Image (cartoon, rainbow, N blue to C red; front, top):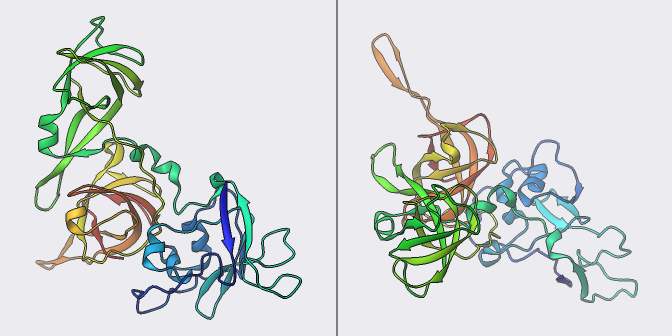
Length: 348
């Protein structure tokens, strides 16, 4: 169970961040005065009903920087009220409640008192659709040249079968001692910056996982999970623990000037709620929760022997959810048209 304790302060109406943007968020056309949260909603989607730039909802909830990194989530049945004077968003009266405990209004005796509610944590409203990124939070995605060269290798199978499945036995070399759980991958694809042609990392194809059963040379492992067929020559890395994504959107502090360098599944164009790879990472100041703007490159045009570079068009936004040294994975949230490899990625 997940407990929410509310008193005079609104459940998530915190001190305003010192780093708010110069202009306040603009209210969306036709924004309602209130909205009742439904199962399956996301904070981004709810905010889109009220704001022209939904990613700026932490500002209208008056969240400070620490709380932005671990937002207080709301639940189905709660009412979101728009105060147009700010604008501000606040939690109104819970459905079925006689008093507005979340807004700090007094109970029947006129006194302000803390109230405790219990709500299943699984009902919490997430920032973005977590189902869209869940597979990317539990698998090794991007490795550098050094990690690729040091990866363990499957050298044989017990039955000499070409491809293996869950429960089968494999034998591998270069398996690090004291590490029992391994992720299996194949066909590392270089991630290349389309402008500089620099290799920023290698994207892996996740095949499954294995656990060590014997430490002789070669090491014996059992296939625990097989999402695709596994064979001799496939590589292995130490398995990562499951990551938790609970970040609210916020703008990068550093100047971001990157490119969209890859689209998951190898297509050249994609749209809303698709996963893309951005050619910037930890070394560029990106972190989970950062929102980036997407700009379409319109190319050039020639008229009367003169060549003109056409201005880029901002067409969408994406949220960074996993970061490596030189690249990051982002989920496209808002878009007008298709995103394409080579599009510019900059600050929102």
